[in-house]
Length: 394
Image (cartoon, rainbow, N blue to C red; front, side, top):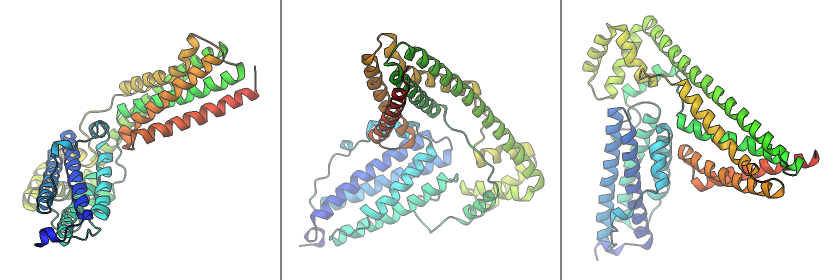
């Protein structure tokens, strides 16, 4: 019998199937991230990596056929709805970090361990080299670069990338802001947790009397106003930081014009221009300091000319906090006493789970683990404040 069939093992067959599914899932994730990436070069690299995963899948399918393993329908492998939501709303930097970790895990587990089938091991070893190159590319993109070519040629960063990172290493003052949507979820989290604690404590002290409604509403209003003003000030601070970054970059251009011109040239080289063309383009831009400032600001810290909206941040933070804070109070609009306390606890803990699950859209944790963690936190907060209320009965 030939090597293609005689040395097959159950381990080899299962690993091929696992790798096949993994390649389809990885390609789908890269494509979803590419759809959100505004930088055309980075999006193109992500799509090339998605295509490379498809190439791996085809090679795995060929080996599976050689071993007589039935190749499933690729359409049967789908990302979970939650994973798709995460890929669509989570920060791209966090998605790239998750992909980097996934690539490293695959290198160490799925592709490195021998299967007992020589031909399969050689195939997995070749794919492992590609996955290692993908990991390096994702790491570079996560640090703000365009990434190396996804074919994996060469080890380590390119000379242009290394020189650029040395220049950027001196400029640690770049800052970036967070999404208002994630702020809204965290606002709901804070409002729910804070007012649930108030409701539990006052319920323990008063036996669930009408005082709980008064205290809960006061806490909800205070939490919403506090979060709204805090979000407004934080977003305005981000705008001020962005303005300070631009001014600092303007000073860098004035004080170190040659180094800034080299930095701009390196950015263009990483986008695919030759060193000569990149130098010429950087030289032309350097004749107009304002144009050079705009390009460097966009490349270094993502300044697009669109400032954050403090009012939008305040509305998102305040309203989401109010929405979360009012949940533990709602039962006391209709009933009082022990039944109101029980209903409030049940409703609040369900809300804790849902908010925790929603947070996983941005943290990329498992939705059920994040929801369960938030629920446990709610139990601890509610139980502790209720016991405190019992020690100070009114």
